[in-house]
Image (tube, rainbow, N blue to C red):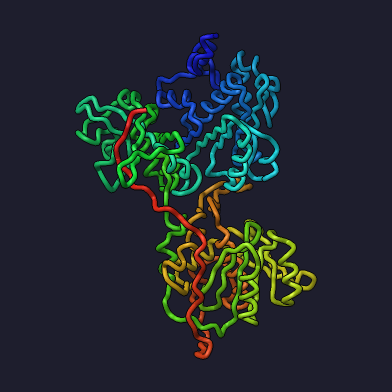
Length: 549
């Protein structure tokens, strides 16, 4: 056995492995990466800022493991264009800088795949489902998961089912809590990089908090790193030398909870090549958002105003009053993974459900004889068309279109396209969020009644990203089941024509409350209670102890 077969570090040393620029892999300033290189956990996640060496690590780790363990690996990036840039600009250059990698690799110039001896490494984007069903793998690596299409990322996991390894690696700068890499992080042992202050000999990990000075590792005025215990200045060498310590989780009986992922949190506070002054400058930069600072500098999820639909945001719309059913009812229906619907009128929403058949929908259509319905036009194709024939003139089909360059968010078809409607998905979701914020959409029932509905809103998040024109825009993405969000979008499309008036982007001039329709007492009754569909276990309590890994 060769010495380099013993570990990846011996391999790097024996072959003097270099990065894409031709610089030797050196752990002097990147000592925090040393343990991650050799971590062979089945599930691995790293929550990180930008530019700390993780992509180089994963490229070398994949090549070494493909060679040594004969693993087939799928490496995903957000888009096909990202794949082209990454493989052409990093992977191929790393291979060309290292004679041993040139020896391993049979298809050196290929973009979509690399054959390492008898193993394969496939590079795939996440914006088409077709790419996710083409090949099997022993390891799936999700690079920049938070910018990827989450349902396609899930599809890739299915490619592991026949492997004896079934390894999953996730690393990304985070976006918002509960989405992207934060999902794996919450199911990990949450290792932080602990350093030791030479003045008081206290261990600590570097953190940032402008609200609690006990959690602040930088003196903003003096622009220096400081010990959180004694206040002494920390040197680059003290930041450079540390060790990973995992958090200990316990249940209510005090028993340790075994987490699924080996998790690491990296921030630029740990990077000895980044000074405190540079961190402070980035924090005070008027051209960068607080969201950018948390995600790209601190490597932490960030909840800013409007980026998540909070439970409190929806709860403010709750009412225990009786609803008047005398105005036209509109039903929004999302299909494909079951039938998810919401029902409401000009006064607000009074019903929702998730079922496997259309019985509940037909019950509503027969109960409210003048009700109209707007369906997802790109979901189930057969049954909704049959229902359109059964209820002529009462069922419409909505297509999503992205980034329509107009304030008119919804366009109804005419002539041959009667019965069809086109809406801007991203802007329509934003419209609904704005209307919930301004309490324009009442939810008839209790907090408990609408809890399962909120879970679907909790599954979406808004992040800032670059569009095809290179312009930074904010888009809503999904991190889980969000069917009732889209059912509400289709309901809002129907209300645009049959109740709440024109839908457009809010400006200071366009914000106004709808006029209340005349109430008809003989049609006033209690709202239908929403069905309870989903079950969730209570989260276990967390013990703030740590252990060295």
